[in-house]
Length: 169
Length: 239
Image (cartoon, rainbow over all chains, first blue to last red; front, top):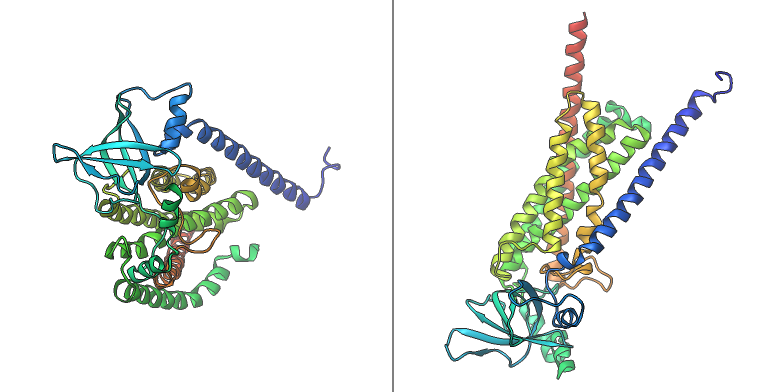
């Protein structure tokens, strides 16, 4: 047994290789486990549903219960923001350019809230199909630019937001 | 590679680099603060609140960069029994934890005026919070053992396991609907951020990176000195 064993140096190299394989296979297992867990919990990780997601969910096996808390996000449709007869409740339509959802909200809207702006609102779906929001958050996009540049883009007609809006009209 | 395992060899390289890194840190952070706070324009939507980004985004990048360095250092330490790997991991952890903390706090300060909320459990924010907990968990674990070599090995395994969180943080904004906006700088079709705002951001990131290196070298020097003192004491006790 002793005279068959390889010299010390190569035995150390084998151990290193074995540790390398152990770490690599551990990493692969972990990655697979993470993917499985994240896929399984996708429904809870998703921060909000778009109106299309919600329509699909309603048509699927597990429709939204009345009073079930959920979040809905999308763009505030142009010319859709109105104040209800009580003078406090705001009514508007959220769109993802495919489907729309009517939302009512009683409270203070964030500064960035305006028509064409992305928002996320939490609340529940009423029996009449109107989403009753308890909270409205403004969503900010990834574009950062000075006001003059934004104005110039709008003048030149290269404003992305307007393009999207034209598609819906 | 193993010749850098020798502390004297490490110090021979690190010591002359230290003043350079310190100089770059002061210059870059100073210049980026001036550019970010005074010369860069306000954003068309966010107004002056956009200036929080010059701290928030670099610290978020550093939170992930420091963790990535720790994961690589831990892997080399575990596979090749390369002792400096453990030292670098241990010395980096508090720095990375601080960057993560700064990222979370500045993000919260930005979120209140922009989104209308300090905190939401969206995928990006939650995964960064988990990164912070992993940092804290590593620091607790590595110090929990009487036998420091065993503690470092165990804690390094934790670092490798936690590395699975890094791609989740990066791609969380693409895989799921999140409140947090998608990436503005590191993306396929070029940055979606105006050059007048991109420059202070990039300069600040260079400053943050060299700041990390400065603190890392100082912490490693301290750790080496502590080891030397411990060995001298042990030598005296034997005599």
